[in-house]
Length: 315
Image (cartoon, rainbow, N blue to C red):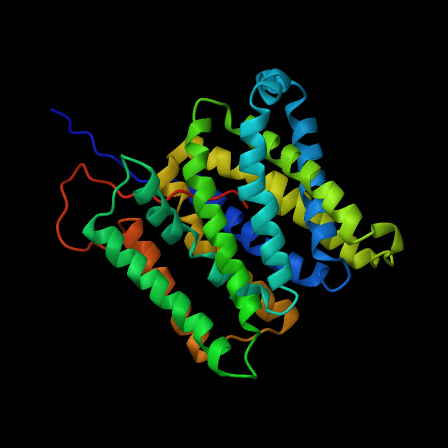
């Protein structure tokens, strides 16, 4: 008699996970370069608009995309606001003062906020002992990262450190709100939110940045912006959806652990950024918290059927 065993994801899934982690880590790297020449509101609009256009071209009317966009436009507007427009703007403003690696570490607190928000606003995702420990570890890591900004004049400005954390909070609300889109094809949800958020950012960009008054960025920065929009946003969405289809949300959530190291590596190699001891310690604490939330580090005893799933926001 044969016994069946459940194997983990294959090499293809792990390869896609590492590529996605590199792309989403690259978004912090690309943004750090671009904000030196392009104001944050303009950068957010261009990123979202180009990514939305790319996904519209990719879909080419499939999945009944246009009737669905028309039917759910109010919901897409809310999701686009809290999952794209607000967090991207906060992160880009923060990155005018802090490096790619540090911004990625601070924003890696997203799953912690997601768990806390889901506990408050949903009935089926309540806090367990493991989730509480994971959240406490992650929040402790955040305190370690932000602490020097409160007491040390030479540290990064406190407001710049807080903005990626506030972006993570916005992503947490988006992950909870996004449950209502489970019945829609994932590419349609991505296209809907990107379309809505780019339309929101357009008047804000025109009013505040007045882009016709700006100096046109260098060709290198133009290339960085294209990479940010097309690779780290549009193509990254497609990779994420592919991982979801192949391995499910639990394995897809592991990309959260890969984004900060990718951003740090790119920042160190190309921007000569360095992390101090406190920043490394904060990253370790947040990483441990995410491992506990994902169930990869066991806290106490759980029934075999109890699974911890950490939603992943759309970057």
